[in-house]
Image 1 (cartoon, rainbow, N blue to C red):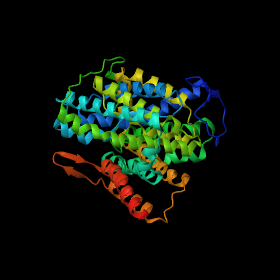
Image 2 (image 1 turned 135 degrees about the vertical axis):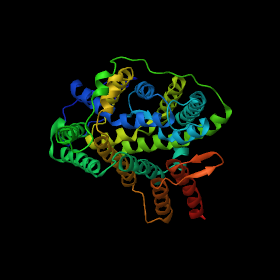
Image 3 (image 1 turned 180 degrees about the vertical axis):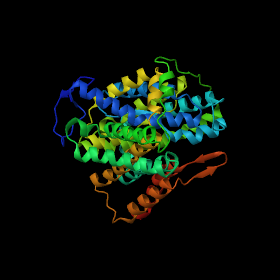
Image 4 (image 1 turned 90 degrees about the vertical axis):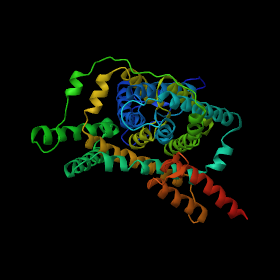
Amino acid sequence: MSDSFLPRWREVRPGADDVVAPDERLPWPQTSIMGVQHVIAMFGSTILAPILMGFDPNVAILMSGVGTLIFFLITGGRVPSYLGSSFAFIGVVIAATGYAGSGPNANIGMALGGIIACGLLYTLIGFIVQAVGTGWIERFMPPVVTGAIVAVIGLNLATVPIKNMASNNFESWMQAMTFVSVGLVAVLARGMVQRLLILVGLIAASIIYAILTNGLGMGKPVDLSGLASAAWIGWPNFSAPQFSAHAMVLIAPIVIILVAENLGHIKAVTAMTGRNLDQYMGRAFIGDGVATMVSGGVGGTGVTTYAENIGVMAATRIYSTAVFMVAGLIALVLGFSPKFGALIQAIPLPVMGGVSIVVFGLIAIAGAKIWVENRVDFSQNKNLIVAAITLIIGTGDFTLKFGSFALGGIGTATFGAIILYQLLNRSDKR
């Protein structure tokens, strides 16, 4: 890239199998379409997380766009990444606020104070990494650990589409039809259509679903009434933080999971692009931390670099940071548009579930790719045991409770992988 603070992207017109690097871009119309695809990829999880915590989804959408742009600016446009609602906060927010599971969270202010504290700690870690490098983190989280953590993020989310997004046999078949549609686009299509495999597969599956349900009465029909009645422009329900020591102590330690996620995602992108992004690791942590504090300051969830969008990059082989600048701007605008939220919510749930199966699977494979690219030696028992245990406790959502605090699957897998590796590595050196 150039020596300027922000990148000057070189326009390319790649072939079907060519990689578009972070400092390259497609022509702006195609770049904008790719940005739309990334917004759709993040949308389901970004609105699901706030709903589970009693936050306003429109604020979450808005702050995902703002956070992505903050991350883009702080990293100088060098790291391709989208920031969306982090699922790592769900358990601790519920524990800190006593949220009952439906409607607005009456104690959202306490959660926001804890999220800001977590973001501040994350930012400080970023400054330390920027000053002294990533060596100390990589000693705690070598490729066998980061690969396992990234894989677990995808595997842990697998039950969401499979168990919760298909309520009967017909809807399960529609999920299968959706991921087959995406697969056919990925393999048989060419050019820009192939690059837009997630978006094209989703549209094709939605049309087939509408024909079978609205046309032939085979299942729950597509309901567009919410889209028709939704306002084009609306103001999200912002909330103010309150700083409670109890909530901050519960929520701030989530920073370890965020660091592991971000480190793993950057390693995954490095493996996929062949570009070493380690020099931007500190700035990436700072960007994510600042974005989390800004989001928490107005009623949004904590944010993290999104594995869903890394899955899209893996499928399209387009890593241009210009795409994420566009996606951030789109999400920022759409955060003020209930009409857009209604459009996405009108997508049949089984279709969104089928797309999620593809994207979550690609996340898991990105973790395996970290192992392959870093030549992790599984003939060493310490690597074998760390990876094996991490995958199972993360996928099985193994939960440990410490009083009122519960550490769920991704958390136990993250901390477990780090601690277990240090224990086995030390024993191995004796």
